[in-house]
Length: 207
Image 1 (cartoon, rainbow, N blue to C red):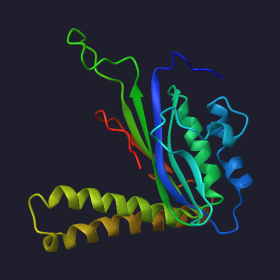
Image 2 (cartoon, helix red, strand yellow; image 1 turned 45 degrees about the horizontal axis):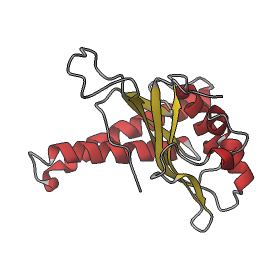
Image 3 (tube, one colour; image 1 turned 90 degrees about the vertical axis):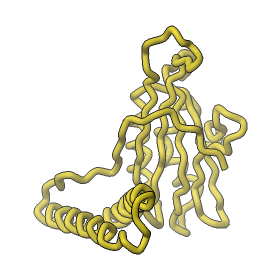
Image 4 (cartoon, one colour; image 1 turned 90 degrees about the horizontal axis):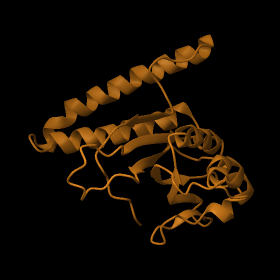
């Protein structure tokens, strides 16, 4: 599959801790949606990023960590692909982790003063983990970091204990609702494995 005129450069970034018993073939199976999207016949063939200064997709066997800093040309259909890859990773993870996915508009020219169109850049966070609780823990930690970072501009860190407690309460209620829904056999409301939002142009993350 070639995407010479793809509307986006899509960058995936994150480190995922894997179970100690996981072998490379399981990683290849989990990431099959990604390497097939890149037009490759194996993970090894697709592991190299579109940019030489990015490590691509690597498995640190000693630390049992999957390291992803990988760019591929593509379109909006990549959203479904990354969701499928995350579902595959859920089966082999040892802990919750976040994957950042950035869409960069390849047709947007920042130096074109005559253009009235905004870049179609977008950004989303995907979460993986062995259990819903592990995924929620990562979501909670990232939210606390974001909230504290913003509020520390106006308040001392010691004054924010109540804010952190409120975030914990919200996630506790969400987890209780998830458990109840699973017991009753119906999908939970307000919970998902990934979340996204539009954003300004972000720099690619490099190791």
